[in-house]
Image (cartoon, rainbow, N blue to C red; front, side):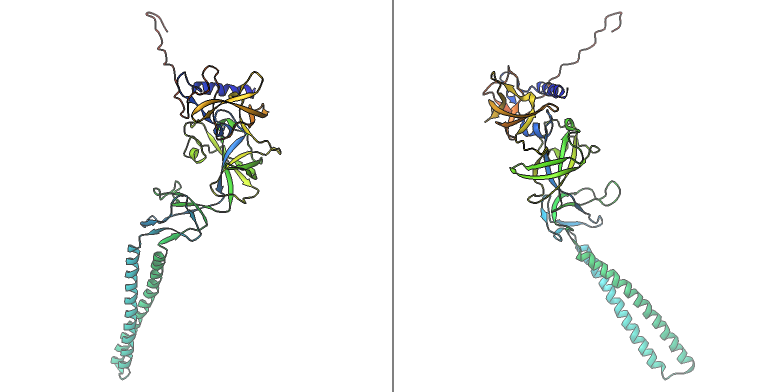
Length: 396
């Protein structure tokens, strides 16, 4: 039943898209990588993955200050403590200078009071009676003024210290070693009312792998599944891991994430895509932002490319071929078949086809060797709706 359903989906969609076009038009060819990995037209058993950081740091900015200079850009690798941005220091410096002046004035006032008290005490020493009492009152008043100035001095010293710290911290450094993932130039306040992150940094060394499931691949992975990850540029570089989360609660719908995972904008961009995450057994040899293929670990090494059986054609002797693109033209290409999964209608091709190839959905009347090819998805043609005919004197 699943095989018939998958085949029906392939046929219906590809015929709607005019898979091989009409006579004299270019043949629409599709990425094997997309077909096999992202579950677009046919569900596959290989998914695209991206090495991301398990931990991130969010650096906020003071909304009351003006950013003087942004010192990094998205994608930059930064060290812990490396400057990220700086505030405008002109106003901070003026504020510090003002407080330092007030501090010096208080210190001068205290010295003046001390000298006044010494003078009054010296003059009082030779007096008696009412005159001596008047000097005593004046000395006590000066001592009170001195104490008040000393209290103000302590407060002003704290103000100067804070103003100096603001000036010293006018350049904000990175709290971790990692890669700048995002810079938010617009929003200073988040949806929860708290300060929004100005710069988001992915930490180096704490990696996990993020992948996405297409709508037709729902249920093909679950938490706890063991998976194998292969470098896109080197099939011999392999890592193992465990699926820790399949997030069906937060799907994306043809967002900017598509291009982040190598998905073209013209392929099922309205379909939901669900992120999943893999915890790695080892991160040795991995780099932040590296692209990987992810597939279920079956315990068997079965190399090859898995595509829907609907894209295969057969010669009279039973050998298989596909209509593939070569130098902008369509060619009939023989392929070697491997294992077949009847539950998903995925046929493994062990030779003759790679993930870098483009293939067309077969049509015996339209697909011909040498036909021009295109990667641009044809517009869907629809029939105009018929107006209801109402007979005179009667109903519809």
